[in-house]
Image (cartoon, rainbow, N blue to C red; front, side, top):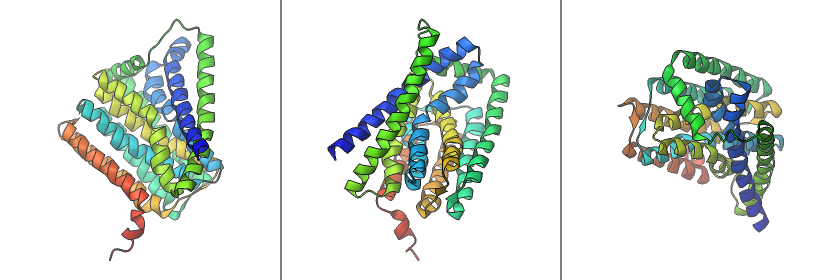
Length: 327
């Protein structure tokens, strides 16, 4: 059991270190290759911060652990949407923009709803996975078009780029090696975390779904938490919620799509009847809170923490089972 705990914690540490290492290199590498900085940071930061979810869920899917794979994705999105957003709002009330409210939030709700519809038959097959990834492409197009037309989006991108120290004195070849090392750390970290977490869960009698939704989800959300809190402390709270929304959309469409392509996933009733609908509900609630005054206050952040607390309680106490017993 001690070895399993050390393996799990060591895996999470590697995931966090690897994600940080990769995220720090993308800005300078993009600058050197003359890739559009806006595209790299708005899409790239959210994508790279989702690498832990990708690796954990992919490894779990290949091992036939559908509940862990799906639970990690849904749980991670719920953690970032409620817990991470609440922490940022408690530090400093979040001011947002119409673009974030109308585009990022809408796409996030759409992506969750789409997964709910596709998985309602109890299975996410390879065709479903391809469909999810294809549906992500219009979002990329909308981000690029919006960036070209909106100067504010460019400023947001520069802020995101500055959030990770550039350190441009580091040779380009070394940055490539550091990025490869970060990716290797993420791969090994995911394997260690899944192995250790499964052993811990079995020893403690934790169901695989609860293991993925709560334990793995919280661990793989550390990069998003780090990026969002860093942006908030720099007085750019609109960046923090924008990154959360973009990361959740990528995780739900692309990460889940890749997992379904690798190996079709069995979708339990707990996912389709509770976790996904509750995630959609939380998204709509946050949308409503932000719409009033285009900001999320500290008092409203407490509402998000209550939602997160109930979500954790529900998954550990099998709320779904007694929900079906109600008249």
